[in-house]
Amino acid sequence: MEADATLDCIGLYCPMPIVKTAEKIKEIAPGQVLEIIADDRGVKADMPAWCKATGNECLAIEEKDGEFRVYVRRKK
Image (cartoon, rainbow, N blue to C red):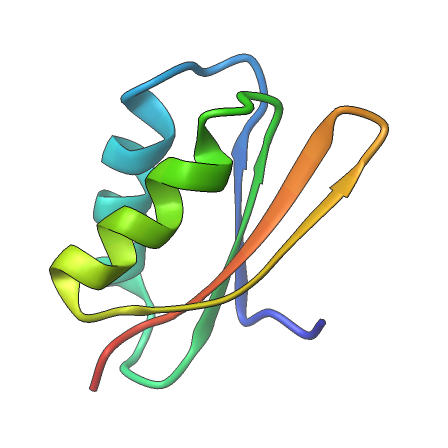
């Protein structure tokens, strides 16, 4: 999936990937996609819940070799 910006959260654990995502999402324009790379399993449940709470859109979560790539579209 194509992303407009990437956020590296490798080595960060709950709640830091969400905290960092909340900060970084403000740096991109509405409608753009942020890719979050994390190795915390909790991101699979936490990120969709955060998106639902904030109105952002969780587009996809990909897992490969213990690494998660989450794609979030900023709300308009």
